[in-house]
Length: 108
Image 1 (tube, rainbow, N blue to C red):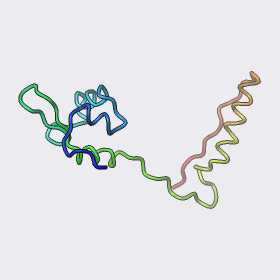
Image 2: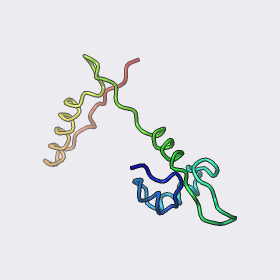
Image 3: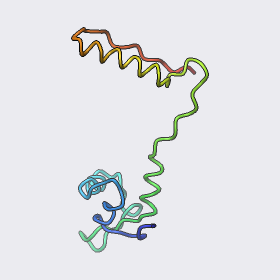
Image 4: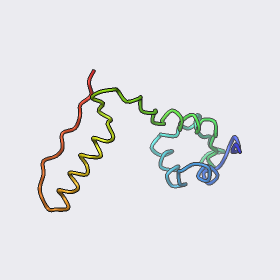
């Protein structure tokens, strides 16, 4: 179901992960722009949000999918990261102080 093309703060909060308060903060901080994401009916009147512009904002800010892992030396090696975290947590539980684990650096 596609939401209505224009909606109030409460209606927008119902179809996004944002609360009404979060939407008001985004307006006051300029993240949602007047004339683009919302319109104001009469001076100091109700804000009306344009669904199409909200969707475009959400999609533009979405985190892109991670690229496929390289065959060797991938800094996103989940198994190696998990093993390192397990070692750190094991040391923390035993009360042993350990140096911070070395993080992989990106190669150009």
